[in-house]
Image 1 (cartoon, rainbow, N blue to C red):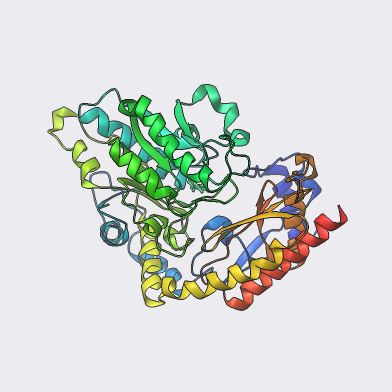
Image 2: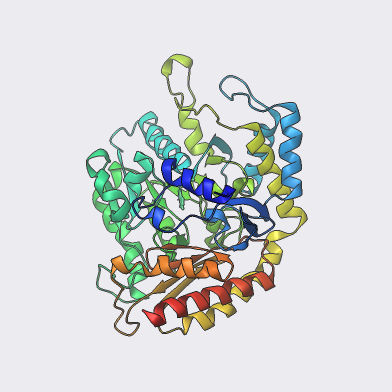
Length: 451
Ligand SMILES: Cc1ncc(COP(=O)(O)O)c(C=O)c1O
């Protein structure tokens, strides 16, 4: 057995992979990635693949960026870890101050954790406890969107709405009011775009007219519902939700775990509509995609509810062992410096434009029923019959087949069901975007036209 074969054998024998039917896993030996080089991943046999989903939506400036590496190494020379419980450290402080500068509106306070799920979990607990401590103890529930995805811990699953992932946990979850998803071809209100979008947003008003005084917060992935299959919200939708939330005086909690750090073309998606959330969750791209770190930000309104005398016990009794890990904070600060020095957001407009134009060819394919895009986030939905909008049988695993075919063309992508996701690193060159688009087009044609 060579080294790759040995690793594959051990993987098959011992490693339980996320979101993976392990019974089928041994049938398609895994690629074992051992190196990163800018926007490319390299396997144990030396094959190079363009990272078309930014290693699950995290890579921002490319892999192993020398500046981020140096910042982590430099921090490691000084301090590997120290707790934020009862102590502080310079980079946790500097990062919190920097996040307050770049976050929308008056978000000022950062609470660190390690993943998007925990950032959301923390946001939910903060929203809930805030109301308990300002005397509105009847506020015990949340409003969230159909098909929402906010992570895999029990609180974030409660506000999540993807039956395939979440239904089985029903008895463990708290109740949430569900808002219909906008721009959904199978609109449950039976409306067509664009009336549908306005009606979907206005549904929040109906819910809050009835249940407003019991609601802590509206939880929403702004502008693009990622794991739902890249469901883009139309212009004005988020603004309408925001206005209604304000009218009923509930907290607005934005989950920017996927959309944050440039993915939509702005630093945060909320900026696209001038939304100023009370609570905002961030993760994924915060460290440029190098180390696990997340932050839940709050404004003064929320934060002040936690202030009091010691024996009032208004403290936020929450904190993870590795909260605000110094190495991760070093990576995050270096990544934010790169954003400014390389004018990443300013330069992104050309890449987004290029991506949009290049997608036109894919949109014309016989089995591509819809392409949804926001900045560098793309969902390409496949269907058996485009005209009749008839999906493939789930058992055909068309999305999976397409991404496996794309590997043969040197590109790593991932599907969400039969929606093929493209989310290239922000540092992708125009040539690399062309390669990603060409490989995706070829893979879709090969798989769908021979099926
Ligand atoms: C919008 C959103 N929120 C939360 C999460 C959960 O993040 P993590 O996987 O880091 O727990 C994700 C992950 O995809 C996400 O897209």
